[in-house]
Image (cartoon, rainbow, N blue to C red):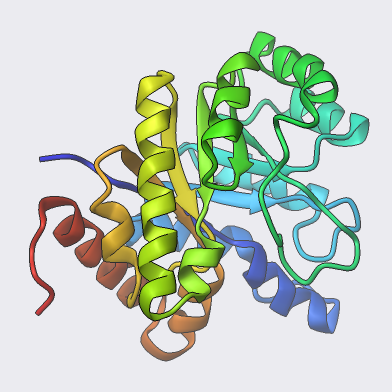
Length: 247
């Protein structure tokens, strides 16, 4: 049976903490609980404005867990230096704008290849697995391959927000992009806006081997607890991967 990994994004635990400026709730504690509850890895986005995750969170997380850490970050000199010092399991390069509420689209790997190439090379030379967060576009897949990025994460936001025929259209885009990752020998991940309601169709795409989900699971945990939210997501992911009907 195909294995699908779940990476929990802990950013919005930090968002709640920072609303009061104190130390609770602790995103590192959430990460430990998530792993105990069935998550396979932890994702965190260290933004340039530090709106949720802080530098110390990354340091404490590395001290607290041995599971894979996926550091989302902008392709800037500051963030590259932090990544080279911390050396997480993986770095996912994402676009970043100060005024956005959340990441609004994928990285333009094709249009920014010249700037991205030395960054990808430096991170890979340090033994860090590099992923590019991109829209489901075959042109971007080819650009990622040319940059020698071993992984891409397909932006599922437009699929998650669509309805009716538009959702089918966006799912088709994801499926075609995922097939292109296989043709280019790139590992395929996916994430953004995924929930209990829409995750099964994404994990049914055979090339997808990892999902990174944060906001929905942290929100759901307010009602069911983090353990319950992760358990239900993993159940749906496994069922979707083997083609089981939801019960």
